[in-house]
Length: 249
Length: 328
Image (cartoon, rainbow over all chains, first blue to last red; front, top):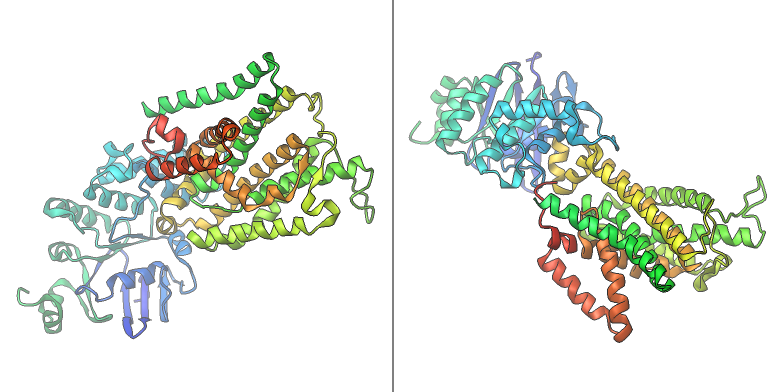
């Protein structure tokens, strides 16, 4: 437990009478992909927002890299090395694909308040940004507007931006959403290779991907984690079958 | 291709701004030179606003505050100098001045400080609230100027002799125009460099998607605050020139009509386009004098034009002529 990079203990969030996160305790260990699954409305995205610092928890503690980050806002958490992608692509539509990634590099460099040097010819930003685009296979789209690339390519760009942040942990909120079988397969392979770089907390509906990738799975139902375990343990768990996987599990 | 076309349009605008007053000089039409000077000054005020409105996506409805602060910096300093009354004598002596350079420095410092305060408060809001609070702050300063009898109150303040600039006869219309045009060019060049910098990338990012900014670890607030202050300083400098053009400053420069006018220059010319404010200010002044001469309700067609621009041509005049941008 103590070697976890990210750990949540009793994290709770209530919206009115709705308990979105109910004493959630979970951890993310080095080198693992930890999948968070659950039916629609279970509170997965809320939990990601709480971890990313976009929603403040009512109670409970979040530790990241050995530090309690309860009081840190989203900007501070990102700068500490917590990179998240969004369920619905959240990019800069008027920027080129390359500029989207450069902005992340700019943040990592810590030098945002530079007023005179032209940014587009700044090799210290362009080169590492291009490298990430090559990794996700978007290099040939670098000069296109983010608004003009396809849905699947936007998902890839989300990944490139997260990679460019050189994070200590990834929070991926349904990276496969709307990708199509071919794209999902490619992304699955890509994520598989990513775990060596930083552990991944993966929210995903695509069960093929989850079962192929996850070292551990946590199942969230009505804001509560009802089970955590390996793929086989979760497959064999009766509660999970009843609550989530249904007949075909 | 579009970039080249925009370059062409921009060149034509720049050449026209210089050529028109030179031709007017040859034809001995000083009034036209004054109009061109007004275009340069208004364009500069717009360049300031464009930084936050165009690139930052922050609709400030209070930029008259900074325009007026620049104007009053010129008026107040000149009036003390011309009346031989020091601004203060203790603990140390501060005298007025008729030197534009000193006036500009004062205008820059005061506007930056005021913008820092206004920005720090207003930038915590967004959308309609931001518009209304910037307006409210500008109106506060407007009423303050009206109720301050020492500097003319509602009647304003005359600058009997236009302030001076080393090596230049500022009372000569073409010389003063040249000064204003150079200042505009500097403001535009500065703005162009700024928006292409790291800071500029962040500012334009904050406009498009604050959520994404936060996720990559850049706080939009600080970026916007710096932009707001720089924007105010450019507009204040234009205000100082405007007071010298008219040799008069009054609360009108601070009123919300003025804020609206500066906004019209930017929107008409092209939001977020470098030469947009120049195109907008030129079109505004041309319409005012062509239509205003024959019809007292000349602002009616202006309103219709503005409506058409907002509805059908978001890139304004420059956008219509040069086409949409490929990417930022």
